[in-house]
Image 1 (tube, helix red, strand yellow):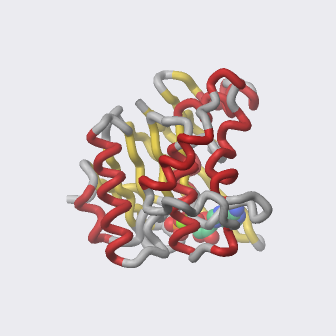
Image 2 (cartoon, rainbow, N blue to C red):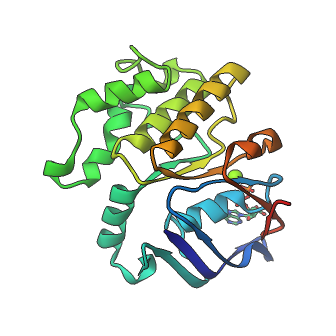
Length: 222
Ligand SMILES: Nc1ncnc2c1ncn2[C@@H]1O[C@H](COP(=O)(O)OP(=O)(O)O)[C@@H](O)[C@H]1O
Ligand SMILES: [Mg+2]
């Protein structure tokens, strides 16, 4: 379970203060599939990064299974994130000098040796996201949508209980989008908790709950 208690985040840029997330209290239960929509600049990426413990709130607490993650040391928080959470970033974040399979294997670098999954798992995940046979290619040989799917495979490597995905379908054609969403729904049916950010209102119905962000404020969809 993920709990946000009075979580707020502001940015200062060019003398202006932006309220990226106004004080928010809410819970994501285990097994939920929450879809977050909102316009560009609404605070969606900030919200997801706060849930995932990637950025520290100015105020409030973020708890994973009752543990306040900002009470942990940096090393403890990294390890917890690695064991529990897979993150698909909004912007392609593949390492250009590594092959596709090596990129998918990156999260193993942060796990104790005994916990690291074998390379075979990376190849299976590439197959699941429709990229069988792409393991030895370099990121620059892939389209934007293919790179995004590599990022999804990477997020799933450590078998996370929680998947946080920031606009995972942004660069995909309609059919590939449908295939990726079918994968997300099947992962969710198998028990994975998912929070997905998208600008596509059509995808909102795929989840079990729909939140709308506007100007840093979160509302439940009617
Ligand atoms: N690192 C940052 N520094 C300054 N302002 C930021 C930073 N990150 C985001 N913002 C601002 O916070 C607001 C919310 O951004 P973001 O969460 O990326 O929105 P979204 O993902 O919905 O497009 C925007 O006004 C954006 O310009
Ligand atoms: Mg964003």
